[in-house]
Image (tube, rainbow, N blue to C red; front, side, top):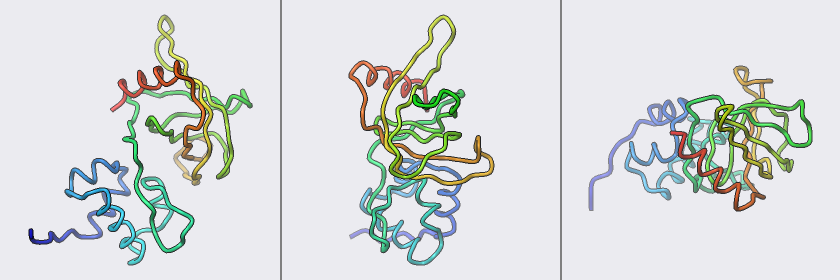
Length: 176
């Protein structure tokens, strides 16, 4: 049996608050996905971090006692601004913060947990524009002063065509 490593909670919390991804945490600290879930529960229990802080990194269940798990899809961040539009409201636009095959984190579009919205994402050049259309359900929302309109929200992709899955994968290839 290998000896247990000591990891300072404040170092882990600092990394999470800096925006490190789940996969980066696993790689940096050598956690398994199950181990990471346990660590998140301990951070909550010890009040080192709040549920809202972990919400941007993890998927919390309805059980107030703990964390259900981590994201299953790797999130990628765009190296360039990617506009996203609410299909039902042409004046509601924002930006994609990060994206995965399972969902998108966006800023600037008002939403409430449980809302189902249709989105249009546009990026690329004028001679080679890319358009992605999908439906998604809001999983979390938080207010953030630096965000466009002060709103950041996470959406799970619930409805996407096979053609748009290919376009989504193109976007993922362009992100890091």
